[in-house]
Image (cartoon, rainbow, N blue to C red):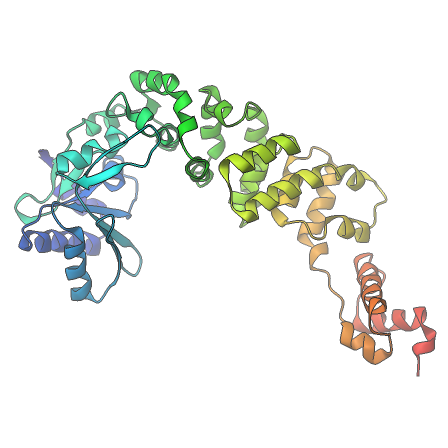
Length: 416
């Protein structure tokens, strides 16, 4: 234990959260437990980066402390008895509590076997030194820093360092996390850690596709995910997923454009661009390996299918109704990915025309209206609705009255 961080913590946190930590520390003390804030919030305190995702560890029974806090403040409490953890849900933030624990790995890539432990055990099980610090919040030593692995020194020197030489063997997803912290914080992976990462690349094969996919999707939540993907390519990590995942120049261009679109389904769009230059077979192999959600897998498959149809959209005289017919039914992510990736101006213009306008075009008349006019039920209704929509798309009609006139023009026998 060294250096007291109470004044820095008070300046860093909103007053209400700071007071709440003091109160939790007091309640833990009353239960004869030591309590600490740990992990990312301690790291970001030193970096002066806002972070109100609060993790607390206590020395004996986190759930008992969480129940006391929840009852006292009438909070929503989520318990995970198997793991000895609990979450207190406040209006604008949450606090996760866990019992200090120790863990070991039965084999490379396995999920850890967790047992109760001390604060020393708990900090020693963490991924990097910058995440292996804690601040005491119980009253007698409130604000005291526990920095057993020189995390503060590594923050000052802007480096990412693992805690022991089997870290990547135990859990190869730490390679992805190292790249994420390196690029987010503008740090550098220190030399020994980098050598061990290169030595242990083959252990990526011990990790499930679900866990690797999760790490990649965490990349996609960062401001510039292409930086992490490029670094992973340079270190040989991408080749462990597929040998074709190496075009940094394409990613740099398309990911930047994707961000500028400001679309809501950014993760799906990033996935499509990430795999855009692969063949159907290659992207299919990635889908099998990483098991993305059905929505994302479908978007990737549709992106590949649509990519083969882009020449049809490069025809100068193509009608809006033809654009609609070609693109209707595809997910927006698949269309957006092709709009971002193509270097053909007319194709991009037509894709964006569909996204911004054509897909929203609807007829004023519906099937019931057409039946009242006298159009026979069945396929004739569907065909007439298509005819009306195409006329709307091509700018030939623009009102309900004009739709009715077109119906009578095509079927004059329906006039009464």
